[in-house]
Image 1 (tube, rainbow, N blue to C red):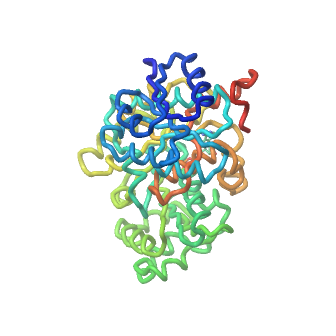
Image 2 (image 1 turned 45 degrees about the vertical axis):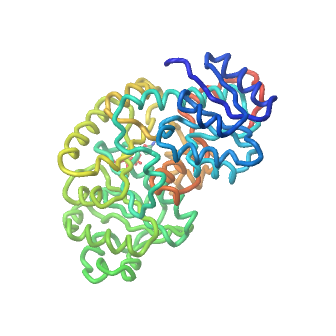
Image 3 (image 1 turned 90 degrees about the vertical axis):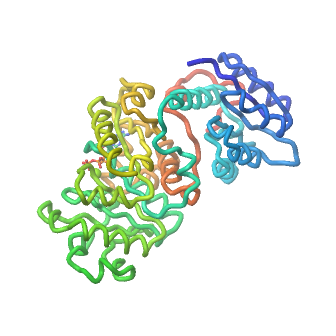
Length: 413
Ligand SMILES: Nc1ncnc2c1ncn2[C@@H]1O[C@H](COP(=O)(O)OP(=O)(O)OP(=O)(O)O)[C@@H](O)[C@H]1O
Ligand SMILES: [Mg+2]
């Protein structure tokens, strides 16, 4: 990777000196400026902008927002530094368009890892045609988001249930998840609900599937206020749900709830195509294996000829394997598209979540995995989505695990 050319906006000499020292030691060239206007004018000549302490007349979030509104600066990654571990401050930065946020006091290695990760993400993706830019997605309000993967076992249900849970915790009673993995869907299991009725029953009830009030009676409720439209109880019932039924159900469920997540499974037919077509955003989890990447590539080629689905698709790299054989760059090259976010591997938490029926975002809410799901929710549902907390590539995790003594800023957690 070429050396980073970092522009640091910082009026705090002690802080800027430390940041400069850490990043310079890692090979980056760092320019420090203390004037926000001058920094924005110079930003285009740098590969990364870090916003720390600005002058009193403007906030760091304002500077970030202003940068994001200038098209010439839109592709430059921005890292904002929180002056405390205050979640609200982080959210303000992320809503202002920051690509990543780090809170003081932080470990020098964490800063290095985040800067490196931003460099990798943006350098790798620069040459690729973006299918859906995170920026466009974050700024657009959405109601219907589909999660789909051309390969089974990619984590589709895990992503769909966690994203829906994140949203439901924000708006209890206003969020629904629909299991349209019609043959063997397991959304109800992941959420520990026992549905009295399923999508197959709803399909048979013409009046209810067309009515925004009646359709609600077909949902099972989780304890935290998520409405669950469960998959048919047996595979043979899958065929009783037609493409027309799916279209009508989607329309009335979207009218009944503020946010709707669909687990669209991994089977491509007219029904799943209807969902992908109607969704305002598509989240497509893939895992780092050549066969999965090829399948996704074939899907992109197939869809490119027929619809605008590709343009609204965001790829999530789900690190299903304990060892990382393919690097992010290999994955993106294999896919021919950029990865929006990645989910870390964990040998325990995901399975525990399924077995207990408690999504990771509730059962292990303070983990990096939960933070990633919050990020995916924000990506999926735009600025109304859940707060995004941190954004670190998997390599940052590895570095954190490193037991070396902490760096200049001391450990945060
Ligand atoms: N990053 C990860 N690390 C480890 N295990 C994971 C990870 N993501 C998901 N899993 C586990 O992988 C399994 C498959 O996940 P999930 O059921 O969400 O996939 P799916 O794509 O919906 O599968 P299916 O095609 O069967 O519907 C689950 O046991 C889940 O706990
Ligand atoms: Mg599934």
